[in-house]
Image (cartoon, rainbow, N blue to C red):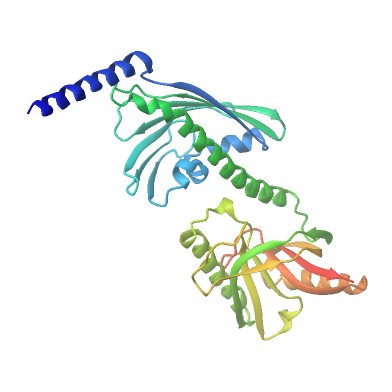
Amino acid sequence: MRIFKILTLMIIFLGGVYAASMYYFVDESKNFTIEKEIDYPVDKVFAQFNNLQHFTRWNNFFSSSQSMDIDYYRPYEGQGSAISYVDSKNDTDGEMFIRYENPNKTLKYQLFEDENENPTLVDVKFKPVSAEKTKITWYVHTPKLSVWRRVENFWTEDRFAENITKSMVNLKNVLGNKVEKDNQMAAIKYDSLMVENEEDKLLLGINVSTSNKKDALYKNIVMNYNKIYTFVTMDLGKKDDEFGYPVLITDADNYKDKEVSYFLGIPLSKKIGVTDNNFNFRTVNPSQNYVMYYKGSYEGRIKAIQQLIQKAKKDEMRFGDIRQTFIERPVEGQEVNMKLSLSVFK
């Protein structure tokens, strides 16, 4: 009994020392600032922060968890938008709100975590350093903690900074793909023949042989594109900003054949493990291409292909496969918007 009393007194004493230390030497809340720069224009960067559906795709806190369930609430973008989240595996939940927005300059977030009635306040400032570079500054104010939980303030700033560092890598990848797509759209000149040097690509897709009867080929392409898109987004968990435009590779002059063989794939940045044998990776080597952009019925592409082949023959160039890059995803019953690239060499 005496030992038990001594232990009890020691625990009470140590608890008192801990509580007093926390009360007198550790702030009940923390304020800190984190700064980063990213090589993209302020309007494109800001759009990734004020749209919470975009925000959760690249922010490491949300994107790193496979068990995170997120609900989005109108207006989805800007002041008044909100989300709630539950992560059953990591036993955490919370709500996040955008309370204020000054376009391309300031956002104010409130984050309520794990039923804490006091929110973490995060003000984010955006400042253009140049036309192609933006400075982002986070001003963070954490909620007040009781003396028993105040020890958490020792690692709050480090944890927040680590999350931002990882998030900025994700954001750079997202904006890289998005800006590349925007630039490609802006550079389009339809029905003009151009010469381009194309870098290598890594495609994940499927090999197909199908009938070339009227409409049958395009219906088959749409069906297989939907299979690949579903696999990449659902099974592999990729978002639209994480991969490029779908590419179909086939013999340049097989449009005359009764049956067509082709490879249809979606560009990815690196190889990943794929357990479904229906899908495989294909590397497209760097090449010089004769290029035309085409918009219209899928059958109408043949005239553009013939022009590319005629140009190659006129220039006494040999040619290989033709690549059909769908700038707008193929949809049954709709016109196509595509880039036709004929690889040529001496």
